[in-house]
Amino acid sequence: MMYPHMTLEDGIKATHLGIDTVLVHFERPNAEGFDSARRRIPAYEWTGWEGTLSDGKLRRFEEYFRSSAYLICQYAASGGARAA
Image (cartoon, rainbow, N blue to C red; front, side, top):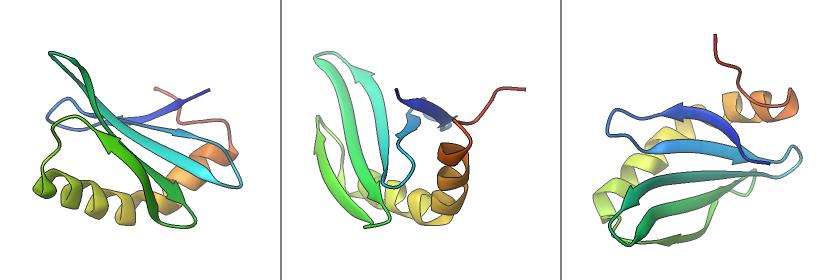
């Protein structure tokens, strides 16, 4: 199951999966389906991306990922972020 983490200001949703190894998935709808990128914690490696994501967008995801990895892992361990 993918757990929601947050929605960025441009509508891209960040979700995560797992506890020991957490897979973070960024996605947004496009005309053909989705633009998406996946990154793994604790290896900090991209596991793939598809669609029309620019290098600038991937760098932005990298910054977000590095600043949020600790919280994402905490949320994954507790079953996901919960909406208030």
